[in-house]
Image (cartoon, rainbow, N blue to C red; front, side, top):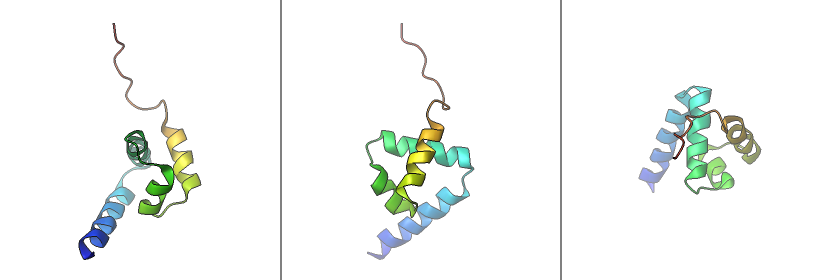
Length: 69
């Protein structure tokens, strides 16, 4: 149980040190990989509305995939 708790603290500290744009990209990637917003919010100790807003803020700003021919 200790390892899970300390890992959450390490993850949160790492996330908090990222620039806002990188945090938003990270949130978008987690969401795109199938995690739901309430789950992400719980682990990062943020409100679900904040997560929704920050995911929406990032959409369309990332690296554009190469067009398929």
